[in-house]
Length: 219
Image (cartoon, rainbow, N blue to C red):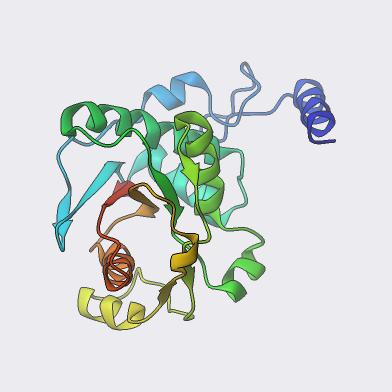
């Protein structure tokens, strides 16, 4: 059934000529054409910051096409763009893996949404990205290890201190879901690092210490 759905969607794309979300071209019949994708630029390959001994990497700068991509996936139901966001993050991660001697096996944890927010949006955008990231990388998706148990305010208008208060006790680890491999936390934007920090704190509370963090972008 899933294969038939893919074939049907491919036929629809061909008939209706899917347009690039960024330049409106229909030459490649894709949501992001190769020219627009080539305009995305990586950050340097050093950690953006370190929180409680955990390196936080950010793949790019939250501006221009990368900003539009992230907002498209997150707010505008442009689910097809999750593949391109994952591809951008994976290509960056391959470079830092070579330079930082990172593990070959990882369990990938997308930042969870609170249940009512996910129901309202209809999906967790970072779970979509993580699924594509795992298809590209061969890593294991583990979206059951960490759950969001507290409804929090949107972070973008809050100071760092307010963000940390907002996220206090927001996450809960189910240690029975832990796999025997290091953890890679994925998020879309790392501004102050407070979301990663809150998840790191909860993992450390459960004696899970082998952690890497990767965000698609930083301001």
